[in-house]
Image (tube, rainbow, N blue to C red; front, top):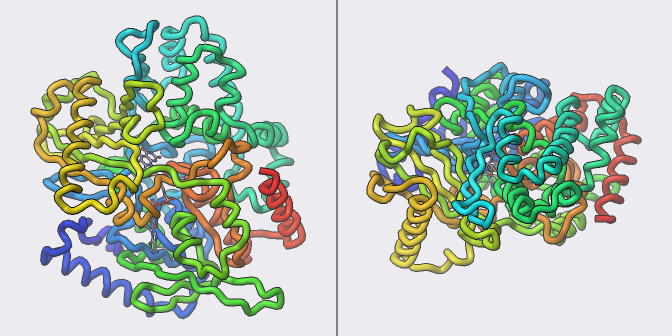
Length: 570
Ligand SMILES: Cc1cc2nc3c(=O)[nH]c(=O)nc-3n(C[C@H](O)[C@H](O)[C@H](O)COP(=O)(O)OP(=O)(O)OC[C@H]3O[C@@H](n4cnc5c(N)ncnc54)[C@H](O)[C@@H]3O)c2cc1C
């Protein structure tokens, strides 16, 4: 049995005082000590076991690299992890899973698992989202749209609500398909690796040119080219906001193409047993292929040295919070960029390019989340798993404006005891409003926020919810910061001003030699399948630099300068 199938059940910090969690902590400590004794130097150390870090590890061990993943929390997965309470398994964050399709190249979770000899049973979701949006003259009871798994069904439903915009709807989503089909025909790897890029260009010149055309464009510009109706444009804003946390004008077209089409192509599929099973199964595969995933290992510094003739800093390993130093040829940070370059890397080693990143991008808000266990009678048979509620278009981006709701037990009843459902509701909020509160005030504010969520849900589509509540637990931006180890609990970077599509988003290499970043602070951004993409790319780039994939140094240098030039334009 591997370390991962034998894992102690997840412990949540609130249970840390119990004796069972004390023995779990001891088991984790002993395992960490045993693994650290295994090698003097690793090919790569990955700081963090979010889906970005784990995908990188999976792709690297599959090519024979010796990889150590160090995770601060007690289970792997970060925002895609789980916790257990009251007989229920809760997804801590994500539950709408892209990337589990069977065909094409954008099914990155299927492919990452496959690279370490693993697969997972998933449950197909008949729809991505059921939107419950503001009322208007045309839609007096509110704009209700289901994004069906079947693309034609979705387009017909939307066109029935906006018959005068049928052509615009077809044209906008048609452009998204152009982007998606191009992406889905490429072998998705590192855009920083010129030999690979040249190979893909000669194999599929049309697809590559199409992507190059859309790379600097935003979804809002394309939508406005085809659509005039302001309510429909607001709908497209929501379509973008619900995963990018910015409206269409700020959302890169490449990301929109991926999300708006893969939901119909590969579909949304829920992993049996909960989202937290994905990192567990992936970690098991990594270990079976010779890698190591160690939890309760808090990296406090990325070690750098300046030994080369050029005097540039080079990452050579990490220091753990208990003072232990571990050496590696490459260090890959899955922490956010703010955590990496404002905490883990020494201030004097922070490159100019990272200072510029902090000018181009800011932290998106965090979330207030409520895990509510309810009597199943309150969830009607017509309910979909994923829902979005908004009552006023002007509040789409406000704190506590858009309300996201997932009811994963609709797809997998095994997550809760018989006769119960899990309602996971969350809404954006900043840490500022939660800092400096005394214990009573903090508790009271949490109660107020969850009561307001329940009131909105009752009105939107869950009448009788308040009386059906069996158990509830509220997380705040403080909770996200503490347990997900994300600066201010942020969901990820969002552009400070209108971006040139994806051109400003950094790839995986950094200007500190041998230091890479992976996850939602890198191209193409937030979302589990998106960070898996960054994991594929990061693994490819790091493997090439380690000599485990082909590379050409001269072309590499030229490519780096070209990207630097583009970013200076942005
Ligand atoms: C409430 C919520 C709902 C979401 N819903 C969805 C959804 O439905 N679908 C979807 O696709 N996406 C969703 N997302 C987004 C998605 O979960 C994230 O974009 C993605 O999981 C981020 O992965 P990552 O690898 O970049 O980082 P993370 O998941 O943040 O993982 C980083 C890991 O690094 C560890 N770490 C950080 N610093 C250190 C250190 N110094 N030492 C050791 N370890 C460290 C952290 O503990 C963490 O485990 C949601 C996110 C949230 C918060």
